[in-house]
Length: 274
DNA sequence: ATAAGGCCCTGACCGC
DNA sequence: TGCGGTCAGGGCCTTA
Image (cartoon, rainbow, N blue to C red):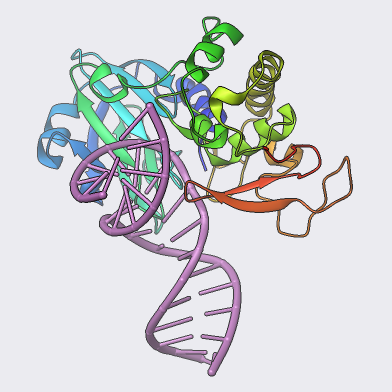
């Protein structure tokens, strides 16, 4: 499912196809993806606009338009944006099509229909409450320490909380905690300075390597050209079937539920909180 | 500030 | 073969 490394990859790979292009038409096959404004207004306001810039904030993709507005897309769990020639018929799970002025089309494929789109005057209306970008220079161990200080919430839940830090979801949270050797149920305010530094290093390392690997192709993640990523081949705990072994200790990876989300960890590498 | 539950969705999976 | 039930999960919302 698209988390920060997948959205970053999609954004980077979409740039050559869409930058400077104009949206000549839009086909909405599932109106409810449009959160704001109405599907009708979304379509009429978007058609004719040029695409000036692509950026990412957390798991959101932001397209700056010539009219001054921004198109914001969230792929949620199963969304992908696929570049197709105009003549290609949409396959079963395509929910929206952005027709471009050069004969290409962007197909928004989303089997589970969880994806969302907004057309707003200002990106902050949608992404304003997000926490820091974990790969930006201003996300320092000190910043992480300050944000953890007053939080008596399991660290796994904090990592997945987009207002705590942006872009990390269930699978990268598990990988990060495994790499940092921190148990998912440890409370935010219980981490030592050393553990916070380990955690900070792990967040940046896991995300950076996953971006180099073009994301993790589990579930329905595809790159704009239909290709896959290979980040999941490095996964140690995330998306492991029960019974798989920790590569360090050779003992089974355990699964617990934290805040309603499946959580995988090694009980030896990541010792139980007292 | 925190916790728990529901909602949106569909494919995969399970037991019968 | 097919049916019904359950689960997964990001973000957001409501209720405690």
